[in-house]
Image (cartoon, rainbow, N blue to C red; front, side):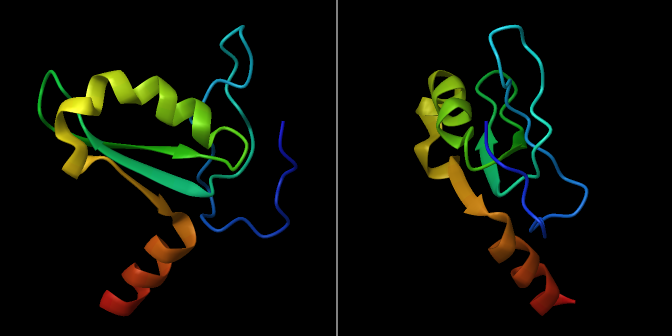
Length: 88
């Protein structure tokens, strides 16, 4: 389990990974944005990950997104927010 950050990079966004074998969701702030294309529908999706659960989330998603490596990206939320601030 990771420690919650004092100033989360993405306010209001939390980790989408299960934090235990019981399937409970993690309550830590999101640090990474995982962007991928769904293998069944082909639509783009995204999920959030904290620093402690990024590896678990990527391992969980890899079998379903392996066909489209060019669409599978892990982005730091700080850079996503900075880039959206530049566009505005």
